[in-house]
Image (cartoon, rainbow, N blue to C red):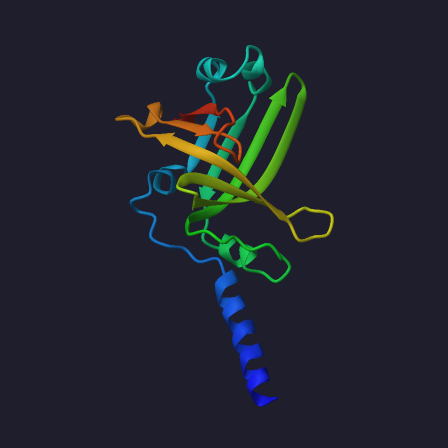
Length: 173
């Protein structure tokens, strides 16, 4: 009985240690070290990547990324219930603001930059699920770093490699 209890406790401890989200050095990760800031849709480039009319649907999209290591506390909370089982290079808060005519929509999420199946990926955590636990949403992502920051491009796709991406350009004031 004592052996069974020790094995059981060891399994619990190893599971807790495995499920904690921890940051790894992301200084060499182009996405992690450059995603912070404000981005807006690049309509011309998005139009080339999608069917005609799609860029118009995204026309009011603005995404802001703010790195914030305190987000680890949220991601590691017991209420979260859904752990992120990838190496995490950066975490923070993301704000999606879309406007179509007079309609304005704001959505706030937590984000993590991860490597998923060899692809740089933005993982978004939406804590507002009905059961209170939240859920992860993945977007395969590419960041094209330009000589001048104002020319940086961010490409966001779906969670599968066969899905089209839309293009965002950095806002620099």
